[in-house]
Image 1 (cartoon, one colour):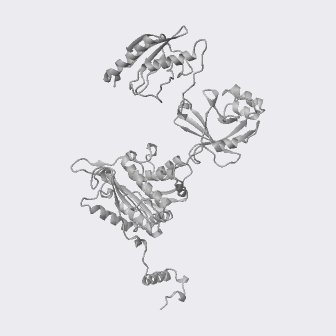
Image 2 (image 1 turned 90 degrees about the vertical axis):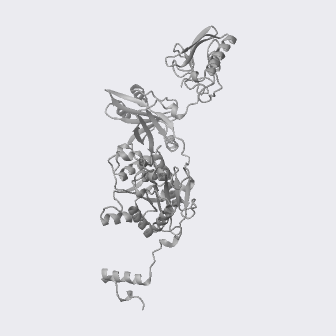
Image 3 (image 1 turned 30 degrees about the vertical axis):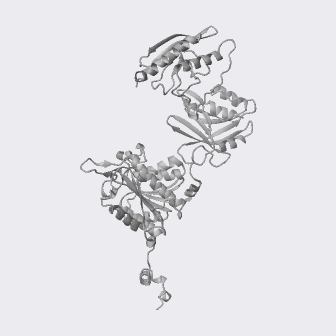
Length: 575
């Protein structure tokens, strides 16, 4: 968009404002308007202060009046400390952080004059800086970064002046940035800036506290060697200066710690000082009640589009113990919706998801089973997986497979464990989420039968994913409809919330209904996106497996036949 063609009245007003300012102010002259090669509206002008003429150029943004113009020295000079580098734009009173559409180019010209008039001439004055940069802005040009937590800094403070202490570091390379953090000082537990267990390279290095008044050396061979020699650390000096060994060391002063990386390259010994970032204490970002999740375990069956998202959501909430069950391999087509990324293509989903969980949270207890529960597996494998699932605190079925659901339901009922499941309706028109708890809702099989009955009772076939290809549906004679990643993520979020609720509030649920049909488009029973239908379930006693006297006698008879030496006449039932 060329703003001055779209809004010529504003363009005329801008030119008129600068012209009026030139008539009134004796310091403004040589105003010349023109278009740049990119059709940007620009104006050259000179400002004069105490006999000095300063040539400037103001160029309007392509988004004017919704973004500020730039004012730069026309000759590429360095004019002010309030300037973005040599020849760069001036940092004026009106900037992107306080810009409004009412500010004009004439006001920008006046601001530039005030800045330069105050800083230059016979009696220059310091202009207070209103420039505030974020942490991200301040480190944009740095490739080596040193993260120090509050706990690590406290440990380092106890190192006395002149002492050289061995400490632990972890270093990782990500997106061209080398990030290092202190992880251990004098045998301390993990004090790093990211969770323990996140992949990285562990290193041992030395931290040296300088005596009072001794400055931090320049990041050069000569500067570092001179300092270590002055401190009498000859052995460390030789290791640092002589080629052949990549190493790190930390210099401590009354200010923030300084990290140096030393390595060989291009036939020379390189010394780099990292940018130190002091990490603030972590503020809670989940409810206090979620602390209970750390001691809970989940059995997740299905690590596809839905299950992979659920796993990571639960991990971020605080869950740290996972049993993952899925026999499938990640393929390129799965990348459209799966939480996993392209490097994991060709890997079993359970193994790739385990790596993803470690990448997010570090030390996570993950058991993986590459088994198709309900598929053509040996009886031993199936029973083994079912036993592992029964030991979990909650079972989550994310397969939308009725056969697999039956096995999960059997495990939940046998172990009296809550179960959560969900599926995305064909075509992504919505989804279904449900949870059942022993003593509160019917057992999973009975609950699912009630839910299917509820769906079918609306007179239109229920768009259950199990009736077609996963996440696929049709609209009359049109091409198949497919659920996208955003739609799967919405259903995954609801499954994760139900799972958290079961683990954190097992008896006092925040959800008044045990199951919900959630609409994402106008289709089936949904009149609009985000319409939600609660589904009520009855008969919470159906979890119990009835036992009568006859069945007990049959059990005893079977035991007598299988283990005859373990019984005597005292095991006979009373007549």
